[in-house]
Every structure is written in C-alpha cells, then in structure tokens.
Image 1 (cartoon, one colour):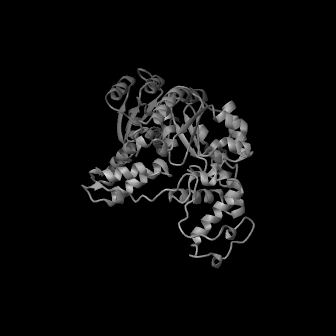
Image 2: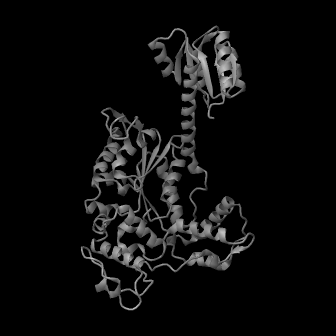
Image 3: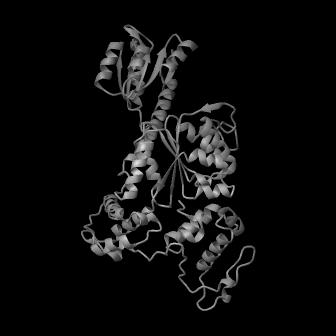
Length: 485
C-alpha cells in the first residue's frame, strides 16, 4: 500500500474524528491536528504520505502549509478541504501544488475515492522513480583498454550538454549501458529516463508509443494515454534500434527533434517537450540513407554526436575484467560460491572471437557458474565455447550441396535428394537459403524478408541465432546483420 500515514488538519472536531475513524477502518495510520502550528510540529517529527488540510485554520491559511510541504524534499500529496468552495479557490490550490480539492460537506465515499486516487498516483510516481534510477544500480561501464578509456572520455564530455547522441555498435557490445552511463552523469540524471525498443513494437502501434493517443482515436483506445516523449519531459529518452522505425514515423520524429513538439494520435493540441534524445543502432545508417530506407535529414539530426562502442574482440584487455564482474554477479544471483577461473579457462576466454560480444561472454560465464560445483575453479571445458567463424566467412558444419543446387529467389527449393554426399539437414538448408537470398539482395533485409515471406523480425532473429552459434560472421551478410539486437 503506497499510502500508509495520513495527517488530517481541520479545526472542526467532528470532521477530524469522523475522518480518523473512517481511515483507520481502512488500515491507515492517522493523526490529526486542529491548527497549522500543531500540524507543522507533526510534520517536523514524522513523514506522511498524504495530508488532508482545511484551507481556513484558526492560526493561518492551509495554503501556507501547502507551500511549506512543496518546498520539502519528500513532499506528501496534499488534498485541500474547504466549506467555501469556488472555482477560483480550487484553481489557486491546484496551482499551488495540491493533489486534489474537496468541498464540505463531503461523503465518506468521496474521501475514500480521493485517497485511492492518491495511492494510485503515488504508486506510479514511485515506480517511475525506480525505473529512472535503476540504471545506476549495477556497476557502470567496465573496461580499461585504450578504446574504452577513449569512449568514457567522450561520454563525460557530451554528458554535460543536451546534444543528441547516436550510439553505434554491434550486437551485445553494451550500447544501452553506454546510454545509461551518459544519462547517469548528465545534468538530467534526476529526471525520467524513458527507453523505447523500436524493434520490439509493431509499426501500427509505434506512433502511439512515441506520442500517445486521445480517447477513441482508434479501436481499443478507451482512454487518453501519454506517449514516451511526454513521459520523458525534462529528462532523457533512449530510442533503441532507431533504424527499425517506418519512413512515415521518421518524418514525425524529425519534427520532434527540430521543434520539440508533437500531437497525440487523434488529437489536435500541440504539446511541447524538453527532452534529451539518445539513439542506438546496430546498422550502418549511412548505407540505409543511400538506399533511401532512412531519411538523410533525420540521420544528421540524430548523428550530432556519434559514439562508437568497440566490439569485444578489439578490446581483449577488458575480457578478464568482464569475466570477474559477471562471475561475481551470477554467483550472487544464484547463491553460489566459486573460486574463480583457471589459467586454461582464462586463456580460452581471451582466445575466443566473441561474435556475440559482451552479452555472449555474460551468458557463457553464467552457464559455467550454474554447472560448476561450488568451491572449485571454472575450467575451460565448463565454458562450452565452440570455435568461432573467421571474420567474413561462413562456417559449413555439414557437407553441403553444390552451389548450383542452392535455392534461389523466386524458385522452389531443390529437393533434399539432390544433395551430394551427406544429406543436408532441413535446418542447414534453411540457413543456406536465407544467406543466399540476403546475398542476392545485397544485404537488404526488407527485400529478403519479402522474398522469403517472413517478417523482418523473424529474419533478424534467425541471423542473430546463426551469429551466436558461430555459423556466420558479421561481414558474411553485409552491414544489415551487424549486431542485431
């Protein structure tokens, strides 16, 4: 229950007693005061979640108490009560920071409803504060290699500004961690940090997610809803996988970046926002601009300050640091105690090419922590590492059919019996077909998905599986399969 302690301030004894009795029956902790001075003594000693205060008190005005509360570090929600209700007084109280306004005489159900509203609001506020600040809960950016030191220096420089930042990097390199670190040390660190995964939201819902919608604006819009930009006002918004948004939404996003204004879906009121924008991408956006898949003007609006997150293979000095940190976190999470890594295990970690980058390393360490008996060292065999594909090459795990028997776009796949030598597994045939179509389209995922009659998300997941399994390297399928988050 978000609302637990309630202070009632009213000079009418009967009202104080009736409110006390009613709220105590609802399991709230309640105290009451007949004067402004006594209320301030209670507030100096204890913290309260909700204050119900009369406007007219024997020793002053209830709005004085409201102003005092709003200046405190952890201000309780305040509901003003009066027997002389006018529109002007209601507006004045709300402008002064009151949560709500109640006119005497009131019914018990009216007070109960106000308290429920306050509890719901307080819960949302607390959850939002938690989400806004949980990014600093874990250890920040790990790494002391020259490339990571350079990245950290750039983050410190741009964090103190409001410049829009575009973070590039392969899958699993930690682009979101870079964004979180940038937010954590920025001047907006006490404001909301709202994240949007552009690849995880369907195209028809994306505009509503970004900008919100009005009640009745489309089927299922039963009430007005604030969008992510509105929630991020005065704070920071992270647009993860920005390359996945549709061309129509790109134009609307450009307007927000230029003018800092938008309208909700189905609305005609222009809303202004003060928000810092950070975007991430695992694709070469310049190439998508050249193919007319991404707006050039939007690219330059996003790319004000680019940050490149290096892949793990280019900062091998950081692998022992990551491994030790992940071992500590995983052991704590699973309640286990391990002695560390053997010399051979660390050698295996350093020699692996890490196509899945930091995320792959984390999963590798967690698996070993679960498998290894408590108290002993993690050995190389416990890591379950398989040889990685050379950069720019495709690994053939079974004997494949000749190239002429590979399925081609627009044609039916060759029957399995046409394979020469060992029969190709259906899963391997599917992989070869996907890579061949991707090669024919020049790495264009949209065209590839259309030819294969699958969604872009399915294609992305398939390619990601192949990479993590070491069956394909980044360069084998063009820029668009790089680091698919």
